Image (cartoon, rainbow, N blue to C red):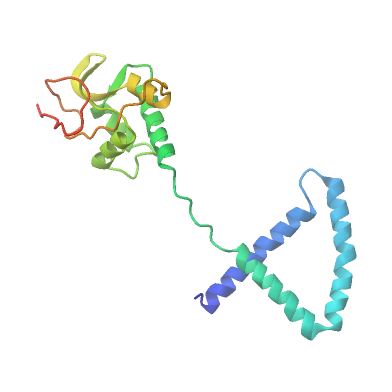
Length: 202
């Protein structure tokens, strides 16, 4: 139950919203002829309404005020936040990683993690939650791969990202693969991590 102060604040905010809506309705942008017609119609309508209220103030005035306050209350109602689409969030992460890969065949986690955590996408994450987000998005983390002159470190291949962004009807994207260990660690084996397989430390 809203308090009297909260009700008054909402009616005040709603009144401002209604006033702006009326102003926009009377003077549509880029349509001066329509604005003149609507303002003229308002000028012809308002005086009779004012005279009617003046003749029966005890009936019409409270009614008009009540209608206005009710409309203002509803106009100031808070908008419920829309839950983000997980699929869209996953695609945004894949695109962010792809942008950091650039024209290279892939990117090592020891390079990717700091860049993602410093970006708007990963500003609210830590390394553990970032790794979870990567695997939830279906990105395969290979335990040992070469990028440029550096090899033997965990990373993500560009080909896997392209397959996720543009999946082939005959070749569905790779399933999410849980991973373990810290970014940048070396391993003697190569290939993507598989469910239930523990990443060996160097």
